[in-house]
Amino acid sequence: MIKEAIQYLVSLKENKTYTIHGETYSDNRLERIPMHVNRPSTVQVNGLDSIVKLVHTELKKNNLPLFIRVAGPRSVKVFSTLDDVKGRDETYEAVCDAPDFRGGWRDQDTAIIELRSAFVPNEGTEYLLDLLSRICKEEGVTSEDNGVSQTVSARQGISLKNFERLKPRIPLIPFRTFTEVEQPESEFILRMDGDGRVGLIEADGGRWKMDAKERIKAYFEDQLSTEVSAGTVVVMM
Image 1 (cartoon, rainbow, N blue to C red):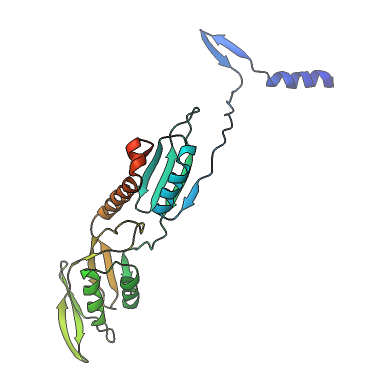
Image 2 (cartoon, helix red, strand yellow; image 1 turned 30 degrees about the vertical axis):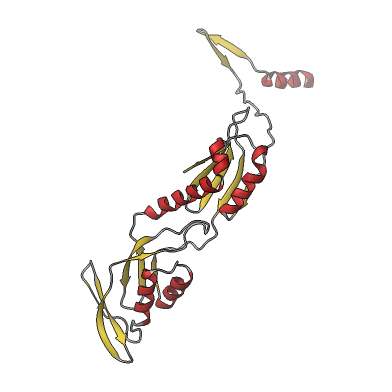
């Protein structure tokens, strides 16, 4: 009795096929077990120069050509061409660790610290630092806003106040991408509220991201010019 039961259970595992109207059907689902392929683990770095050094050192160990894809202003991925089993090696990845500036509202002290530490100095930072040093905070900021430009109460000397019209758009250069390339400049809308908080809102529609990616691409094409010319390295966005 036990023998017959075991034989029955074994028979359930057998794959049986049936031909119906010229079509072949199976009573079991068959799954292909993919062949194991040894692939290198992805090396993650924080600088573009590290990617260049890795490519120079290990280029011949990869399935060529090697593709460098600028995935974003803060991300670069490197992978090989297809191998015999139509797979790729995802060899390297660069993730930017520079400050990632976010637009929005901040208090005056925070804004001053950011302007001195998280921006490339330019006329825009000089204007904002000068303005913030003269804004009255004791009794709040008095402002007039017509939706296009804004006028705020500023202080001159010790007690003299006057109304000063703010520039509606300020060109600024925050640190937002890899330090090996020139940081892209973009315009920010400037606003201040009644508590003296500073509002910086990006006003370039994200164009800075495309500028940063183009500069990263140009960096690799320059640093790996020999490999790019030989076709062993392909740089793309």
